[in-house]
Image (cartoon, rainbow, N blue to C red):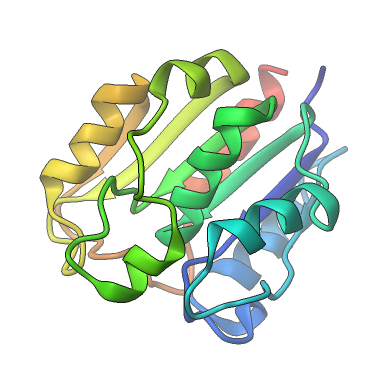
Length: 184
């Protein structure tokens, strides 16, 4: 199946995501790629980002399927990985991905980190896995980002100066989506 859709799943606490970080900017740029549409919606339960709420929303409202690349940032990356354990999708692009609740009560309540990651299921269900991470991320230890890269055999784009990818533009992300479209 070809790539037809991109869905941006934000980090928790993002508020109006159209105006947060690079999300709105990326939606506009992805929509300029021929035959690809981008969906960006405010998520339910935006602060805790519970798996039990976000994954059904991703399936029913955001329509993540075999023609979709899920672009997940931070908590959205955790959601993308858990979604891909049980659903086939064209690709996932993980931005600031991590593997534990980081000792944070809110992260623990989200539900994503209550069990081991099913790396093999994700790799079976997803054709392409791309990851963006930065060693200077103030929230995520590099070891956890590397654990995702190792577990999923990702195409890892490693930086040392991007922090938690909270800038307003992200051209490398658009290049990655364009490359996926070309190869679909």
